[in-house]
Amino acid sequence: MTRVHIYFLTIFLILNFTVKSQNTTAVDVGDMLVFVIPTATIATTFIIGDTKGSWQFTKGLILTEGVTFGLKALVDKPRPDNSNRNSFPSGHTSTSFHSAAFIHQRYGISYAIPAYALATFTGFTRIYGEKHDGFDVLIGALIGIGSSYLFTTPYQREHMQLSFSSDNDNYLMGFKFKY
Image 1 (cartoon, rainbow, N blue to C red):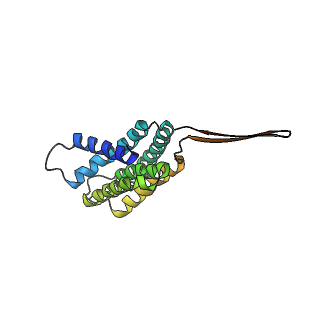
Image 2: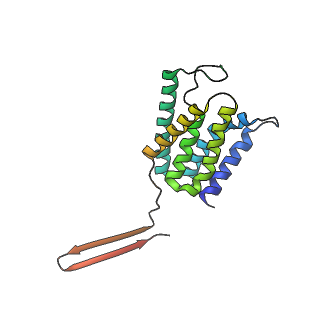
Image 3: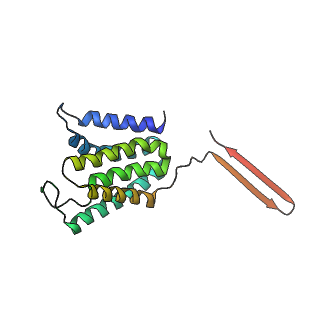
């Protein structure tokens, strides 16, 4: 089973348990995805045994949330629906895009395409639900992506090792392969 299959299975299971009624709207799905996307991402790192990735994801998420909520407190911008003054930046979008960018940086773009699609949908639901404007969503996405890029390194299984040693006129080359 590939990482994409594990990721989709995790998202499906979480959404299946959280969707309670038939009258769930797109905005409600966006509100659920802000929890589902990072939960599925961190769960996938644990399932495949990538503890280094789990830690990198966590550090990036802490930075994402810190910057997002710090800016919300400093900027004090009213929401388009005038419900409160926490519009800038979009926290749903920054969290969702952090997860997608982590997958992209750690495992590659082919694994990240579904996560980017879900993160984009989450941002759309925030505009559609009149909680944010496009600028709030754009800056939220940039915060999430930027935070992820600061902490995430590409995933590499240590299954091949090449070694070389020399001493006077003696040379030794070694190759080890784990499968």
